[in-house]
Structures are given as structure tokens and as C-alpha cells.
Image 1 (tube, rainbow, N blue to C red):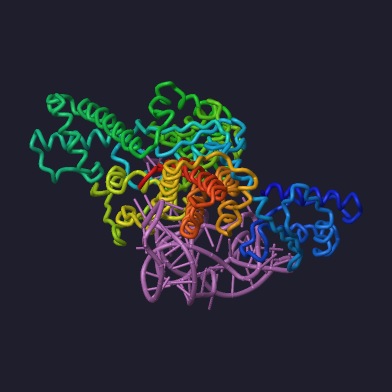
Image 2: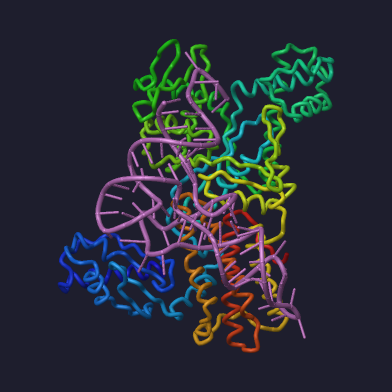
Length: 556
RNA sequence: GCGCCUGUAGCUCAGUUGGAUAGAGCAACGGACUUCUAAUCCGUAGGUCGCAGGUUCGAAUCCUGCCAGGCGUACCA
């Protein structure tokens, strides 16, 4: 609808110029907005004010010229008016809203989809937690955001691939092996627990892994060379932890197209190749016994080390190679979802990517702010150092996957998020998940009842549709017509919370309608029209929840 | 010190890329179930958009400077 109004205004402006009512053919972009106040119409535009300078005319005079040249062949406008300093307000007649229902029903699961992406290849990389411990709540938020962004982009016509980068090389894996082996010694060689070093992983799962390894038949580690024993522990532990992560993500409804191993970049020589290539172009240079990347050439505040003076590469080195590999695989756009505590890493990564000849717009980092875990308003004590934290699995088990996912998506990722476990479990109005799901279930119930009563769901006639004139009905129709725009915007801005908020708004509009009007009435024509309306609402709720990875239940 | 993020109703947060009179939910108060699911709805009240300047027809939104909180500032990962 908004687009149609936009087209009308644009055509009016052209016509006005041709007929001499405007002085310049330089037209600004037509912005149509939805006023907050009902008196200002269903839509309005500030175009006349924006044009004032270019046309050298008073805004209200321009507005009059535009209105004078509007040609409303479809009957979309009940009234137009000039208001305030030069706004044009548009009032849409009820009948103009009704066609959206047919659009919803015929597009069905595809309603709201677009061709914005034009099949361009995009990669979304997210979670990518080190396989050194179970996923915590913060990873859960990243998983929900990454997965949902991927779903939205796919819905908007992008060719999307979801990837998890496994940091399976380097020191932290070695530390993991060492941690497990020390617990192993503690259990089977009688080492005192006090001797466990602080830089090792403290969680109880480390001891479990040691025991598991022993029970699996590796009773011989005390006899091995320590290095070998540590390596065995590391391999075993990382493997086990990674499959645990996989299972947890699956339980969370998150799947990946590819699990990419950091180690594989070293094994295939790609890290060395990347470094060699940049040395040749002078972007990597030696200083103080180390190799540095000239990220300052691309806006970073200082150059960064890629190979330390002890010969070991930094993470940055493999990340350069990894991102180069992504683009070589044909992705036009690469989206990384990181915890906000890594924001200091963005300029150097961006620099490396630009240095490789990619455009700035081809790389996007979504920085997800932290999650405060609460229980009934009180912070849940979490100490990573002591290894005591609530895992993502704990949360899924306690509050359920739907509630967890939805709540993670109720905030813009730029804001930190309070996640209250008690609230997430509550089946009340406080909990937005059920509020939205309830709409779907209620309509399913109406649908069942209609079938019992032998009411068909055939598309109503235009005459029947014309019966949908109650304010609550118009509100629903308006909300439904907004959906494609909301999806598109959320794809463009990579902001999943827009879908969440939309669904809450649509749900509110439906509940209000439901409380005031009966769908199944004595009047067959009206019943048919209303049924058609609420079934459309149900479809959009289902589509939206689907984008969020949340189920749409038939009953609750 | 420097950099990034945040600051909007008592609480938790939206705010259509600069629009008109500031928007929800929760909490408070008052109402609505013989009905297609009350996991719901209707109403009342609640504001110096952190502070101060600036840009312009117009600012919660853009610029500058402060204030407060979080995070980051490694040849760590």
C-alpha cells in the first residue's frame, strides 16, 4: 500500500511539472510514512517540504500542486489534505485495504518474501565458540541472532550459507588437553586438587571428560609421554565438547551448512600462503622479530602482529586466511556475528579484508551485546573463572526452546539483554512468546470449530469482503499489509528484532479484535469474510514465527 | 588516557534512517468470562528522551563538549 501511494505521488509530481505547476523536474526520493496520529491520515509525506528549496516555492503551494495532479485510478484515496507546514495526508478507504487478504492467502508461506537478494551468495558465520567448554547463555543469543538473520536473508532471496568456525588449533586447545590430563592425574594418580593451575579450565565438565576418557578404555595415559597424553586428552576433549555443542545447537533449532576447521587452514598451507602474498605486496613486514600487518593503512589505530617473534601465528593470521577463503568460495557478502566484547577486533579484520581488495560493504560484523541472566529479578551468579555458569542447555531445558529463542530476539542486538529465567517460564502476558503463539492457537481453534459447523473456507466474494469495516478489522488489514515491508527492512538492516516487535503488535491487534467480535456468527457472509481475515492473520503469525525459528502451535 | 556501545515513564525496552501532540509491555488503580481457548481484552495514571550548546522550517534521531554505566584497548584467545 505504501508503495502504491509512493507511485501515485511520484506520478503526480511528474505530471505537475509537465503541466507547469512545478518549476523544476529535480524530484527528491518520495518518503511515505505512517503518522502516529489518526487525524493525520493513514499515510503522509513530507515531500512538499523537502522540495521547497529546489522548486523555490512555498511547501504548501507545492503540496497543492501535487494533490491537484494525483490520479487515483484504483480508488486508493478517500481524502487528501494539506496539513501543518506542508505535509500531505492520505486517507485510505476501507475497501482499499481488503485486497491484502487475497495476497496473503495466495502467497501463503511466501507472503512477505522478496527478491531483494537476487540469489546473491551470502555467508553468515555465527556462534563459532571455542570447543573448550559448553555453550553459555551469551552464545545462545548469538545463535538466535545469527540463525534468524540467515533465515530472513534466505526469505528475501539471498543464497545463504550458515557456517561455524571451529577454533581447533593453537594454545587454548592445548590448555584444554592439559586441564583434562591434570584432572585425570588427580583422579587416577592421586594428585592433590589444589595443584590445579588457575590458567586451566575450571569447570566440572573437565573432570567428567577425564573420567569418561578413562572409562572409555584409555587407562594407560599415566604411562605415556606427558606431551602425548596431553595431545590425546586434547583431541578427545575437543571432539566430545564439539559434539556436545552440536547437540545443544540442534536442540535450539540451529543447524549449520558447514563446520569449518581452523586447523584445516594450516594443514592446507592457506595461512602460510596468505602471509606470503601480503609480504610480497609489503602489507606484511618484519619488525622486532615479528611479522606485522599494516592495518593502519586501512584505518586501524595500530599495526597488528600476525607472526610472533617465537614463530607462532596469532589468531589474526588464520582469520585473514579464513576470510580470504570465504570470498574465494564465492560469497559476495560475509556477515560475522560476534560477541560485543570483540569489538576491538573489527577494525583490523575490516582492514585485512579491504587490503585483499574487497569492498567495505562486503563485510559486516554484527556485535551482539551481553546477556544478564536473572532469576525472579535477581542476578544469577556466574563465574567463568570458577567454571560455574548456566549453560545454554540448562536454559533450553528449563524454559524451552521457543521461549528462549524468542526472548533472545526481543531486543536490538546493540542493547544488553536481561534474561529472566522465571519470567521466561511464565505462561502469562508477561511472556511475549506465548502471547504471540496464543494467537495462532486461538485461530486454529476457530478453524476447527468452523469445520465442525460445516463452514467452508472458500475465498469470500467482494461483497463479503466489503463487510470487513470494523475499526479492529481495518487495523488488522493495515498490519498485515505492513508485513512485507517489515521483513524487507529487517533484512536490509540485519535486525531480527523488527520481526519480533511486529509479531507482538499484530498479536495485540488480533487479541483486541477477538475480544470484541465473533468470527463465527449467524451471518454466513460475514462469517466467511472474518474467517478469511483471521486465517490470513494466522498465516502471517506462522510465517513470522518461522523466521524466528519458533513453533506455531495448533493448541496451547 | 584513547576507542566502541548504551542512556527514552517507577522497571524492561521500541521509535518507520530528520517529521506533526513521545510509544508498548510490566508494575499501580478501576472494569470485562453462560461465548470461537481469560496464556485474553477495555480504561485511568505515569515524560526536562542523561546534561549543555549547535545545525534547520522541524531533533529522541545529525554535529560538538561534558556526565554516568558497560566493553575493549597484547608479540592473549
